Amino acid sequence: MSAVHGPMTVGCTKFQQLVLSGGGTRCYWQGGFLHAVGNEIGLGSIERISAVSGGALTACGHVAHIGERILEKTLEVFERETSNLDPSSEEGGPTPHEEAYREIVEAVFDEPAIRSVAEGPEIEIVLTGLPEKLWDELSIAATFGLYLVDRLARGSTTKTLTKLAGIEEVRVSARKAARDGRLVDLVTTAARIPPVFDVDSWNGQHVIDGGSISDAPFPSEDKGNSLILLASDFRHVPHKEGRIFVMPSQTVPTDKIDFTDPTEVRDAWDLGQKDGLAFLEAWRMGPMDWQKVYTPS
Image (cartoon, rainbow, N blue to C red; front, side):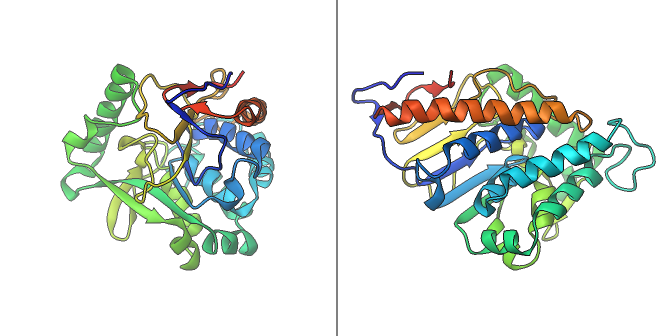
């Protein structure tokens, strides 16, 4: 990775915004990356964060300074799981995902961690809101199908086909959820990908994973330099001055919904740390080209 100088650059300045994509267990790459860069690039005093899906856990964990705790608890739970199918599961249909994920989130967000989120910067968690006529299983399957077509055909972080189905964006403040005692519910709700997770509701509206709307939604108040961490490869991103997009230097070595392999999760974290350190080297050199996507190496 090299720093690029010229009129299309953002200086070696701090970031005011952090945007985190989804990606299931691939989001542990984000955790490793953030752990590696620390506060040097301004993330310790970040003003706004927006996140979707698994990125919600990364976002809240970053603000609460519990990234390593999240990793260790995940490794513990995944070590115990032997199959991604569990007909005896009481929640989330015939899979262990919902119960396992909630166990992780409940364990890591103790009272001090929740207080850190409640008193920290604004974190917007983006969900996909389903109109009443679209929340049945067939409609959800159709919406997910449109998402896959959009994702594979366009390779863009912004989705267009799914919006034609009538779904809408729902933004929830993690800070408010923490103050209201609902942070665990919000983080788990953000990751709901049918049929692995059940469809849930938030404030009376049926919702699923927000990735159906956007894989990298920006804060409502989009202002200042933004660091965008994409846990998967995208061919098209919304470049704009002040935005620095970063993708993994190689495919994150996890199946995003495999909850049985702790080694893959550790590898994803380690790759994130490696990429974070490489990114720091480039950032320290000065201006960075905002019209490219950085893949640290």
